[in-house]
Length: 110
Image (cartoon, rainbow, N blue to C red; front, side, top):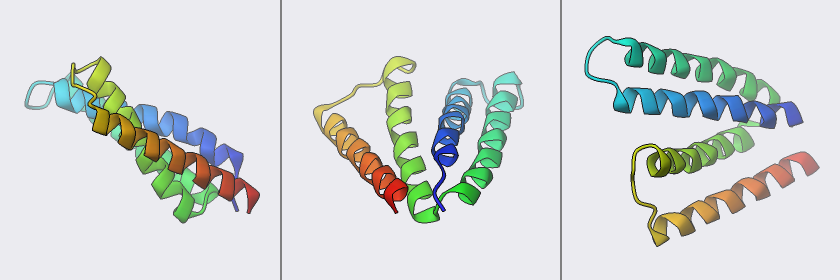
C-alpha cells in the first residue's frame, strides 16, 4: 500500500504548510493579502494530505508528515524569524529525523 509518490508529495505538502504558518505568523491582524495567502497555502496542503492518505498507510503518513513539519517549522523559525536552535531542539530534531528514516524504510520494505 506504500507508494514512493506518497513520500514525494510530502515535499509540496510541507512547503505549503510552512508557507501558511509563516504568512499567518507574520501578516498583520485582519483580512489581508498575507492572511489570504496563508489560508490558501493551508487549503492546498490539506488537498495534498488527502492524496497522501490514499497512497500511504496512516501509521506511516501521519508520523512522517508531523516530523517533517516539526523539522521545517524549526528551520523557518531559525532562518526567517530569528529564533534560536538550542542543543535540546537540535537533538530532538535529529531523533525525529531518525524516526522518519526508520518509518520510511519499514514502509517501503513491507
